[in-house]
Image (cartoon, rainbow, N blue to C red; front, top):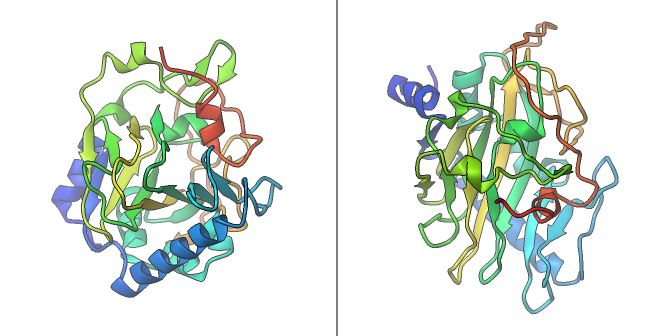
Amino acid sequence: MGPLSSEQVEAFWRDGYVVMDDAVSPEDLADLKSAVAAWVEESRSHDGPWGETMDHRPRFDVQPGHSADAPALRRVASPQEVCDVHLRVMRDSPLVDAAAQLVGPNLEVNNVKTNCKQPGTTTEIRFHQDFAYEAHTNDDMLAVLLFVDDVTPENGPLEVVPGTHRGPIFDHWQDGVFTGTIVDDDLAGLDEPVACHGPAGTACLMHTRLVHGSAPNLTDVPRTLSIFSYRSEDSRILHPNHLPSLHEGEVVRGEATGRIRCVAYEMPIAEVPETASFFDQQARGVPS
C-alpha cells in the first residue's frame, strides 16, 4: 500500500491526474520555501538567466522585464543538483511513493524543475502535453507538481483537461517551428479545463499525455511549483532530455530490470531548447 487510496488510483487512470494532500513533510516544505526565497533574492543581482546545467544552458531563468526591484525568476532547472532538499524530496517523500503506485513498482527519475510565478509578472504556460517534449518507448510517466506555496484560483493554478491523456498526442509544431503549444483549433474540440488548487504541501500527479497549462499570477503573492517527473523503469527516452541532470535514470523505488517496454504511437519529435527553458520556445508561436 501507498499514500493513494484505490479510488485515487482509479481517478488518475480515468482523468489523467489526481490531487494528494501532505505530499511532503512539513520540514521539507519549509526548506523548499526557504530555498526558493533565497533564489529569488539572488536573482536581484542578475540581469538575465544565470548559472549552468550539465548541457551548459543557464540553470536559472527569468521573465523578460526582470530587475532587481521587480525580480521575475520563473524556472530553476534540475534544482536537485544544487539543493539538498530538492534531492531529498526527489528520492524519499510521500510523493515518490504515490508515483510508484501509479507507474511503478520500479520507478526512476526523468527530470526535476521548479517553476515560479512571481507577483505581478506575466509568466504563463500555454496548453501542451509533456510527452510531446519527451518521447519515450512507453508513456507510463507522470509529473508530480508540488505546491510550494498556497495555490488559489487567482495566482495562476495548474489547469488540466481531464481524460485527454487517453486521446491523441497533439502536434506542438507551427509552420516548421517547435513552439511546444497546442493550437487553438485543436483545443477547441476539448472539454473545459479544471483548475487544481490547494494549500502548500498539496501535489497534483499528472499523466505525461494530459493536456494542461496555466495563466499568469494576478495576486501580490508568489506561486511556486516544484515538479518531480518520474517514469516506469522500463521506459527509455528516445532523444536528449530537455532537462538533463546527473540523476536522470536513478531508480528511486523498486529495482533496475534492464528491460525495455515499447508501445505503438506516432508524434513529431520535439526540439531540444537552446536557451534557459521552454518558455522561450512557447513564445515563438501564438496558438491559432
